[in-house]
Amino acid sequence: MLKSERHMLVLDRLEEEGKVLAVDLSASLGVSEDTVRRDLRELAAAGKLQRVHGGALPRPPIPVSYTGRLEHEPEAKSEIAKVATDLVEDGQVVFLDAGTTTLEVARRLPEGLRATVVTNSPPIALALAEHPGVEVIVVGGRLHKESVVAVGAEAVETIRSFRADLCLLGVCGLHPEEGLTTPVYEEVAVKRVMIACASEVAALVSAEKLDTAFPYVVAPLPSVTYLVTDSSVPAESLDAYRQLSVTVLRA
Amino acid sequence: MLKSERHMLVLDRLEEEGKVLAVDLSASLGVSEDTVRRDLRELAAAGKLQRVHGGALPRPPIPVSYTGRLEHEPEAKSEIAKVATDLVEDGQVVFLDAGTTTLEVARRLPEGLRATVVTNSPPIALALAEHPGVEVIVVGGRLHKESVVAVGAEAVETIRSFRADLCLLGVCGLHPEEGLTTPVYEEVAVKRVMIACASEVAALVSAEKLDTAFPYVVAPLPSVTYLVTDSSVPAESLDAYRQLSVTVLRA
DNA sequence: AAAAAACAAGCAATATTGTGCAATAAAACT
DNA sequence: AGTTTTATTGCACAATATTGCTTGTTTTTT
Image (cartoon, rainbow over the protein chains, first blue to last red):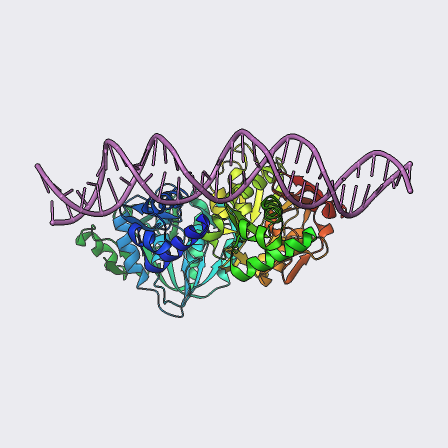
């Protein structure tokens, strides 16, 4: 029995059974436990599995992520994403705006979902490449590096050619009077056309973005159908939005 | 017994039994173990099998999933990417095709470079978002999930609107007679228009892709200006390409 | 806290490998 | 034909890899 053959077998077995024990392997491969341990150590060093006392476990998949901000308030984003995910229904065409919260939505879309997602965010496209059911349309354009999002005339034109059932917007600032605002000028046109071409619009807003405004106005508040926010927001802060005919969804 | 005869027999046996041992082969072929080892070494260099201590195993199938491909032969990719990176010059407009090798190129572009990169690959766009100097144009279209690449009429139209100085192509199969081929039909049109709209074309080809062909033909070999490959390729395999006026760059 | 299991490191026996070299066979050339 | 050149093969030998064992340590369990 060749060493590499053993390695293959170990990995096969690990994949199949979800774990392997050093003792079992020693018996079934007909080599000493020391050899098994050495094998496991090497495979672990090669990143093929995760070594644990007594055996080994499958290596946890490397998260596809872009640097920075991802650790910023993960619970809040996660809460919001969970609620927003439920807005998406089978067969819909959905605009998925760029942003870390919307990226979380993309990751959480249920496996069984059948839908078309139109996104101007390369990281979201990448995340959705692993989803078995959704058709993904990448919106092209010049890449705005800060937000990692395609912007510009081409992006706007592409988006305009769709009629979406739902638009999930990553929001930078939301204010009862100023409406939906952003600090990035180039995103204005893109977000506007997304709103214009979607039947329903959901704004994904974490607590610290609520009641804030940025220099560039995207749209007034009534353009928004749903406001999705997290549980840390006090209930009374949301009244102002409710009165503007926005449906508030809180995790 | 001829050498090539032995080689055939070794490959047959490998296919049949799933592995071969140097000792067995020596006995059954009636040659010394040294000769067997030499045979195995040559076959491995030609990419026909995988050499391991004590014998040889079938060449591991090229992984289909994107994440799987990322881990496939990182050294070779790295070598190729290093060379390909030097082809890019300041101020150029460059098409960067999808692929794990081209992704590596994107990651290695020198910090000081000023250029415009046009890519249909979300992962490459994502990687370049961290580069301070290059302008990135994302090409939109329907996302082909296996390769994580935008394809379709929209992608083709967008690419056609550029005149690039250089096109870096991730290549699936390259063959002196068949030319540049791919197993994914939808990528054909995209690659073709990239080639057509670029002044120079560089094909990034790792050893196992050389002298192989797939069902869909992208372009004949003379369309390629540079062939960039890694150091594991035997020099004589490249002569056929040189004779077709391709400039061969080997790491 | 004690016992058992799992572990890492070092060691020796064996197997495998690469390299240089010489002998032979095949090919190319004069 | 005769000769040089090249390729192929087997052999000796040093270097390397693999394996099981022993010893002592760490981790887990009782």
